[in-house]
Image (cartoon, rainbow, N blue to C red):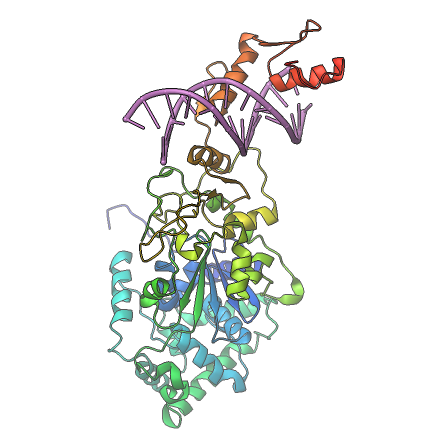
Length: 477
DNA sequence: CAGCAGGGGGCGC
DNA sequence: CGCCCCCTGCTGC
């Protein structure tokens, strides 16, 4: 350390940090991922999930969208809630009878400290750590997570916490002392109880019921890597539903097989260059989609927006959800309008265009911009040659066959206004409109009423004038 | 009155 | 096919 440097230490940093994290989750603030589970929906943070689970981390790595929706199929809500509490607060209370289920769910989701040995903080850089963690997940042959866990259970009843980077005990106590009430279970007695129960259960497991066997099918194929739960990741920008039946790593293969595609991931950008500079305007709308809809009676859970519910209803629901964009070619035609690089750049919101909740849903759920008919399918064969290209805005119901109109229309969503007035700060997205605007400054009124001295800058205004003053329907007559 | 946005024709590559 | 330009209608102030 350089001379004269002081080391400032925030004594309560970890407790405060965890508390704030938990509070943020409670308030659903800054949440950037929705975990759907058995009809309930949890607004959480990628950061926390990926920190606590390489499984989630991998999902997010492969899902470069702003607010994915992860649908857990093999996890129940109470398990998920417990695991979320565990991830956010480092501790959770659980009934003894439910412990096995919870552990199983943790295995499935590879929750560090519960199912997967968590890594002590490394001195290396973060990037290196990511690499390491990735390697760890790729090469799960050693050390065996469960075996490690058993070792932990033999040595420490709090292995789940003691091996994590922050010391665990102050965190737990701090939460208890602050008496948070947002969980239905009583946390005051819970944490130590949970840990004790868990550890004792683990000892039982390690001796009597090897967890691998208890997991059944989940570990049948690879004992060192619990099969992830069936997860559907719904990518906001692209409307793509990804089925993760096997491994996350294989997700893209699954997508290809199912005829789905990542429009935003640029794996197949067939709409080349049509607005490469136009980024996903839905990004800025994303927060709207998941605006906190706090329902105290639901605790942490909340009902998903209707559109999402529809989507979750299955393929038919998805189609209904996509109806605004749905084209005869189906999912294969879905593509990212902005070149599909998956970039998450955020535009300033369109000026003067407040986005309603429902509209925000549409903006998000209907994804980026364009789909076409008459497009080649996955096999490369062209479909519907006779059908003119239909460009449909996925953020509104606008449809056109004119690409220029389509791009121009997209300005509306991006807020792009390339034409600026040299006299004032006015700018617009159509040159014609700028020309009309400039008439304000020049005083030009090219549209004259043939019956009176009235002159107008807009032809439509003259028309209105003609109708109002002269009962003429057409100013040209 | 003025801004906004969609439609369409014409033209060049 | 994409771009330029013009036309047109709607809407808010």
